[in-house]
Image (tube, rainbow, N blue to C red; front, top):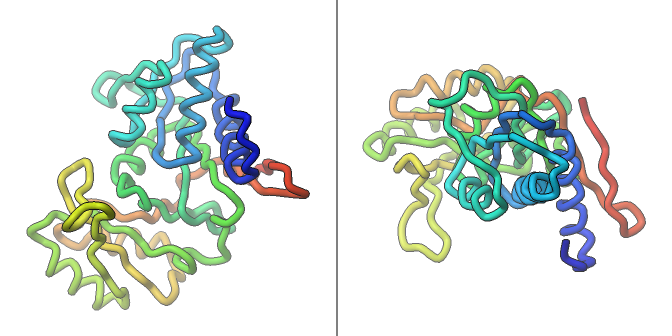
Length: 237
């Protein structure tokens, strides 16, 4: 590992390692997307290389996860080739007291929801800043939409009380395009009082593929925090 002493980076590494350490030999593992999950994929590769871990296969949730898995020597499989998944490791943009999540900062929430929901255990890796009293308080809700349905979907979301904006690319002219070839609307809600109900309501709008509300999916939250300049990890189960 790098000798870099940036406490935030160290904390993310430690959370990723804590999740990777929970994976057992012979497991099929969902590989999430994002900076903290990237460390989990790295540590899985290191455990395989050292012989501490054997015979695992990863199911990537994004192009990023696939590239990292190949870089660190984690063998990949697909949902077509497996009949179960033992564990999934993924990040989140917000976590509420009931372990409900908002995900989709990396525009991979559709594949993430498929993979994370199939796993026997879904482990969420976050830093303390992602913990909120109520979903939607710090992060906009991502909604993946078929391009032809963009305008009617935005109108429908406005009727639900949301303020939708099309996510635009950074260092790229035009909108963000998902791995499925769709667009992402980021929605501001003044309050998300019933995440389960809103998740279903948005997904029932014609043209919506999936939204970033993950309700009742997470089993274990590993939270990294900095105390006295050192990384510590606590569990919410």
